[in-house]
Image (cartoon, rainbow over all chains, first blue to last red; front, side, top):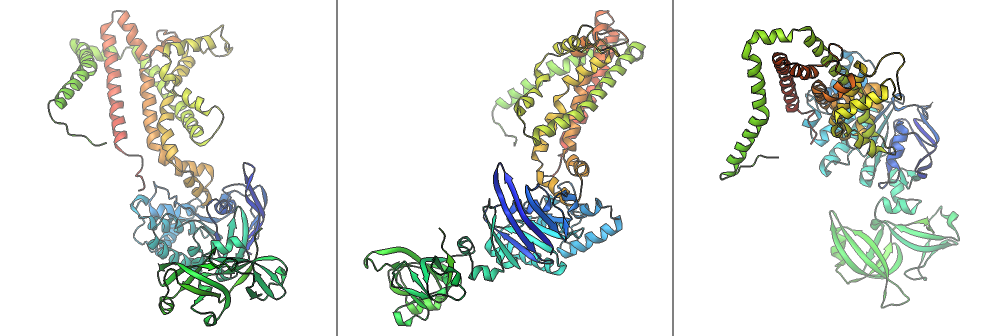
Length: 365
Length: 270
């Protein structure tokens, strides 16, 4: 175990911003803490680094209880959102700062700086000042500075937040490569789910100071256990229903619609559930018998939007209580342009909707 | 701000007004002093400056200015730090009080010190004499030159983000190393400027030190007090000579200040 958090709690003005949070992170793992702003994710990172004291719980880094240790003794590398490079020092002086305070010899420092500049692909920049670098370059120098003294743990607080999209994607790839090469246990904090998917071995979803769910990106995306996770990680269609016996009875659009209960959902038996399906797991057909998945009902095409390689279609399910009046259930569907063309979809067209795949969540109260 | 090019006679009129103003207020008095001082020849000026009374007065002036500068560099930095980095009840009041020396007459300050430390005062000392001696003069000088260091580094400190210090902590630097290697280099320029201002203000002080020290010849006399006494004693050569020496010192300080002002403290990140 590389990082172990036990019941970590932090209050700000009597408000818990991190609530009784426990988490284990393996050596060499790339862990991404994903949450909206104000969810407590950055606070948690600062608690681990020792920049703020915690109110309850314990923090272990590589088997060492660091709960009461100051940041200087935790041996973590921290990359701040705004890089926080020392503006009066050159790139080389910034990178070797952590070695200098550890009284590493000048020659060893110089060697390590050269090594790191090669790693971040900024050879020849050692004598530049931070103000002479682009945002992306500053970000890489901040990373090199945090790695210089070979910390046990690398902590990154929204490291790509201030960069434009193209550079962000490129730097993500670099970071992932460097992390894999050095095998350093890493926690990255972000609000960007795409970033989380691309980087993480595992993702932890945090909301209002609580760690809601932890898992591998694909598992969290396809089989979230939690409604917040389901909606935060991507577009989600949620239909209210009830699981009884081996079937799930939908409340809307029609009580006559039943679905087969997915395996391993027995614990939800007799309870209200949300039927969860990603837009790419929904299918559309022109007639009922053309559906291969489970029928949900009939719907009217409301909107079609171009979404890069796919077509995003919004359909409104028709409630059977009043045939003329549609229920407000909007279902999002992702189709390939080919599918959309074959179906001849257009606004106002009536279609049949089915689920190719779905999953049950405990209904939020 | 960019300089604006004005058309018509207005710029010429403004320029003339500025030149006349500077001539009347700055150059004419200086010229008067210099010409009067050297009217009797350079030798007389040098002789006047080498009198034991004058040397003692200059010694007192320098020691007071140096002392006030050292004390206010330390205290002013701490004060600025507390005002920028900490929140406490009455913070705005303290912040406003820093400017008190600008509004209080130095004479009143000197008098207050006597009331406090004089023989009948609240804090009448038993071991060392404070009032009518150098300690009261130092206190008076420290008071009148208090705002400069604080006011110079306050905005620079406010601009420094806490994250840079946090970064230094995670990199393994303790508080002192962080202050020395991360904070000081970035406030250094403002600090130096504040120190020079403090020194300049202290050298020129008259009222507060005259009252607090009692203006006793050869004992609590500073250069400015000497000029005042020489005038009264109808010793124009002494008054002119010391004035010229103080003037030259001030011009030297002005040069240092303009050199300091030309160099930016650090290149800002864009």
